[in-house]
Image 1 (cartoon, rainbow, N blue to C red):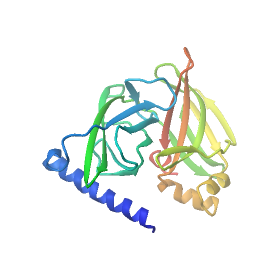
Image 2: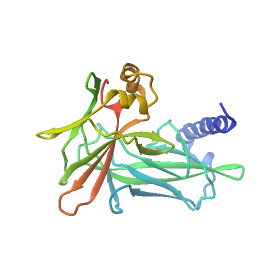
Image 3: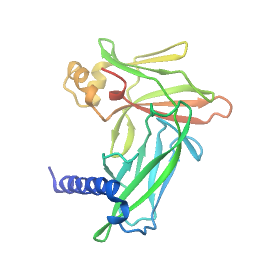
Length: 244
């Protein structure tokens, strides 16, 4: 493990401790009250908006801060995402909130300024849209199903297999072996050997066993709005779609 990785890990542990203490005793006890920084949010594929969808891929940027490293926390989770001033993110469906309801979801950023950590937070409006999907890995390869249409006249256009790395979803460039649609559901199949190779697994069989726990394996799907041609990009983690 190199020094950069070691320091990043130590910083994440420190920030995790600050988060837990701040949630328990109050943020003002641990962080400077003033910060000129702000968190900017934008869709990755459609016009700027004041509201977003669950599973929508968004850009999150820490602006007006003199730093190149940020610890991100989403929805006050104990998990700390270590990264740069900009990354891509998506908010998952919340089963405790009515489908279609709009709620405020929280984003926190922690960054070092001199010898002290500073903190800035924002809340964004997210519509609780449930996009049901499933993933399986078998003799035919990696099979993924998802809706052909979303509420609001959004229709499925393209689907890509992606890897989450350094805060962004990167297209792996694997063309599906087949795709079909039946009623309200689309089915896409990728060659198992190609998938194994792209994710660094030695064999088709190893990929079938390990993709279930691979947090870097995601599907990115673009939906087109039929009236104005706008594009909505949603992302789904393979590990959240049932056993592979």
